[in-house]
Image 1 (spheres, rainbow, N blue to C red):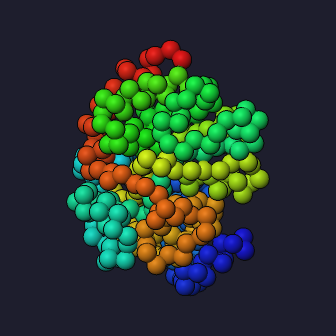
Image 2: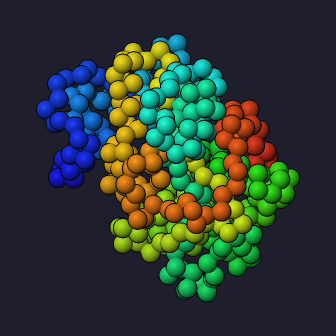
Length: 337
């Protein structure tokens, strides 16, 4: 509880604020982070938050189902691709925040590409998680490039999520296509398939399996590693030296929001440095989009990572996502291992 009041103090807001109505939020980040956002925001503004925790794919499905009668005001977090799809399908509202100039260029670009129907709130690079104790026991080297994961000695010791259910895994496919070209990327994925012990439903599942010694290596967002390590698990992360992509976690106001003014106030609050620092305070180590946010030392140093020029507009489009996932199901997931 002390942590909550510390966070509230950081925001410079009065805990005795008068009541400001209600806002309905779908939250697509980790549960602890969602819950602290709800508690701190309610205590510092007097606004009641009805918080619903859903993965980004599930959130998008709900918004599509409720298109004619929206029950949600704001969608907070989750990989940016579904937010871009929501914008493309007219599910979200154009809104240009006065805070945009304070955000990193990648967050501003996300807003511009969507017609200002979403905005970047954090970013996290794709890479590998590994269990150093398990690697030592099996006499396996630390993988440093994408091609390293194809070595026969890793057979059965790599986990990655299923791209049909995971934004993390779809980011992997889109990254490889842009890095290698589509046909070579799918040749790579077919070869990788032989070494994959399990495709998990959730993007965080593989690194949790690494941390608990259930697999040696994962393909994961590397910001998911430090939280596992803080719990005492043997897990390290690395980004491939030949280049990688990153997610841009996003936030959108829903078109037809019942509590529009309350939604805009929450949106503005969520872009402030203090609000964004709540992520690291709750063991979530993505890079915040507000350039004035104080950075925890466990947040990946983007200056030391080789990034591809990821085309978020193209690979965030619904048709492209469906096409690549369908090709993965047909050309890769149907193969024996």
